[in-house]
Length: 361
Image 1 (cartoon, rainbow, N blue to C red):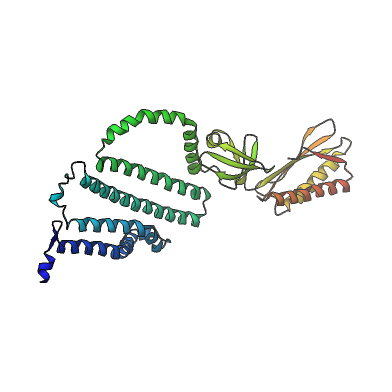
Image 2: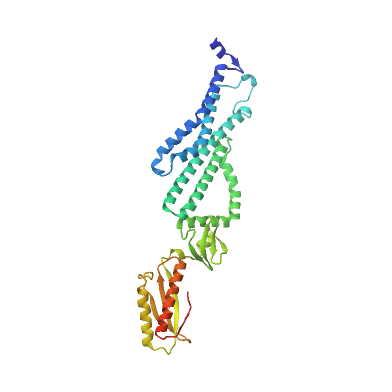
């Protein structure tokens, strides 16, 4: 009785085939999370040494939906193999245009989309791994370039997938299509010449690393801190709190002075001493200040203080002071420079030397 029921035919397919069809579909729906979980685990174990520090949960989270879609599509394919189209419907074959061709190409398209989705999620995962490594190294420029490179690779994958789909699913002559797009692509490239130059310049900045976000730089007449390194321009906030957007092409073509990369700050100024001052007092004054500066722990011993008579002007004798203070904090530098100024004034008063200060840099 049971066997007779299973052998009953509806639309030229027996009940047994329909049961297998729905069983496979239901199994795919039930098992998709299980299969996704273990496939992700296998991939993680294969690359575990290269992704240290990033938990397998992240990979499983990224691949859960694309793997789930792939499992469903695979189960649909296996389920449909249990049935066949009724001959009484007189449907055209899959090689001719008709509902069978549309269904088959829709299925192929879905498979390629799911595979592309899996590849894109794997790229996202490796981007997270690289970002984790950069976070350990605290490299700001690498932190900028990783999202860009990740998106660039994903765009390349999508374009390749698009052409593969055109050639495989829709049987388009991809070579002829690319040749036809060549002239249009050339015109587009010429129109976007400046944008492409700035984009390539951004690569140079990211790889050569002449400066990073937060650095104090001087480009031409613009001096300020780098707020953002984009793919078209670099934004610099000046000391007046205004923002300059300088194209990246100009940034690499110009002489860029990275002030933040210095290991100390220079104080350079001239002291004017009147001509009537005895030379003995001038020499004593110079030696006292030099001795005082050498004993300061924040004045560089690597580059000792420079104190010498530089020139004679209409107003008196010009004594040149060049002092390197070991700090990158401009507020701290200003405070110590002011202390040195006061010491110079105090010593001059003690020696009864009249002077003036100018050309402070």
